[in-house]
Length: 396
Image (cartoon, rainbow, N blue to C red; front, top):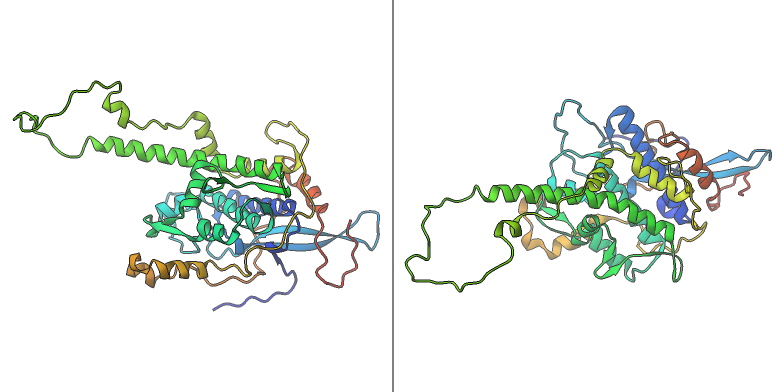
């Protein structure tokens, strides 16, 4: 048993954001913290989830205006109790058993394989989508059905005995957020597309689509190679005795051509997939989306609209607890669930909305040239709501 005593900062849940800009900046902070922990200490968090990203509000003096302060929000990646140092000698990581809700499709399929940076970056994508669907404008008519269908549903199979939902899997593999034939789009206001946010999601998904294209190619190639090793033949013709016959047809493709995998990844796919081994390229697309500056090429562009107050009322009951959905799904599918899986508890304790745990060295780090400095300006221009605290502050 352990206790946590809060002595200073009390953080807020991500449901307190007031704009899509804040959501993306705060997620950027959390990914940056994750990058620092990995690059400096070889530590992976291993439990990226909606409950483990929180907001720390701070007062900062306004230059030239004594007695006046600005409220700055910083994204915090918390709850590192499942974190592990990545073994440098190739030794196996201990298996993890946190919530599957935000796990990568690959990790759920391959469990108990070690967690990778690519898996964690995919989890950040799922967390971002989770809050965007709940709090921003889009064309999904039934948000609760989407959340249950994407995050909580499952199919038999995989390393856990259950794979991720078809909706989650197809989104990552195809690189398109969709619900049936509907392609999900986010809006600034009714019928006005949020171009920057839609582009960010689309670009981010290209990395994952490339990763899973390579995984599929490797799996198909292995199965194709193994197919010729299965079974034996005595060289006889099964139709030689004349008891059966086949009509004559002349085809245009050799059988070996038909069965050979044809979805070979391109060199560009390989580069995108390899980029998920580190954080820099994903962080770069965030910085470019918000500031217009590409830190790789140094080029800048005119940034589209990032609103200050486009959050709508939360469309999902608080607090979100995936266990409730899973219990309902388990009840419906009880006859197909293995008894051993029923007796296990795949979830950790319910998380509090605020945690005193702090990330390694905090989020204020320089991962990309000009990245955080530029984003701090964006973050500072999107001020938090006054939550009723008695503070001597003036927002600008």
